[in-house]
Image 1 (cartoon, rainbow, N blue to C red):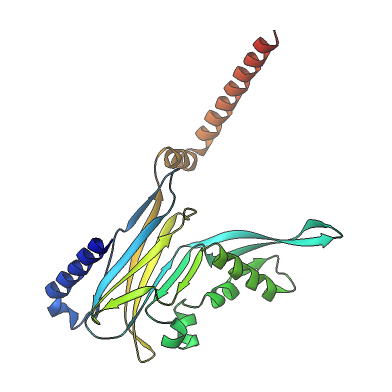
Image 2 (cartoon, rainbow, N blue to C red):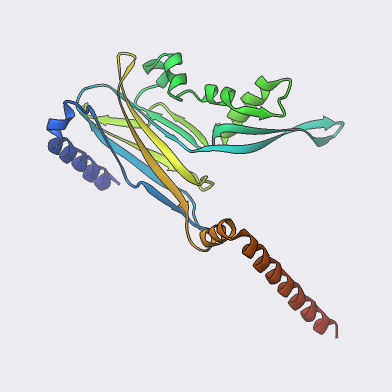
Length: 251
């Protein structure tokens, strides 16, 4: 692992040397270990490495955000010794995955209004989401939603997750969970100095499903009517085969 880190730091140093004329206008250079994540049936998660170089001193914030997702929440109610399913709320408009790594606590680097504007405040994300049907105690649902996201590591905050070497090179390691939503992710890297964002780089990470499951999904999406016929015939054949097998066993 130390050898890998040294190689990455060397690569970042070469980046700094090659783009020196450009850094005057581009104070932040960012790279990633990969920009395509392939999800298969055996996918157990992956690590995303973000690295780069700074032309001026400052603190760094790295934010990874997935597309908005839909999530159902249930509230348990207790009747005597028995717990029953109570109210149900559907949450929309919040990212399925949200990870923020920084070289120092974000609340010490930027004012609250700026963090909310840039999507760097998880509490604000939960409050901006839609809860339907809207409950009377919506604030309690917002808190529960954020608590569940943080507990499952769908939302991650690491105030010491970005490492800066020599004031010029930085790196951050993001853990992508196994339950990774598909789609185009946004990776934002901010250079912060004196309570202000002085540079920002935006990139995209594609998370795609591959293998047999991806073929089935494309088939169902592109030829839905044919997919329905094939699925019906397949289930009918399986049912017929199972019936014949059971009859032979009984005889």
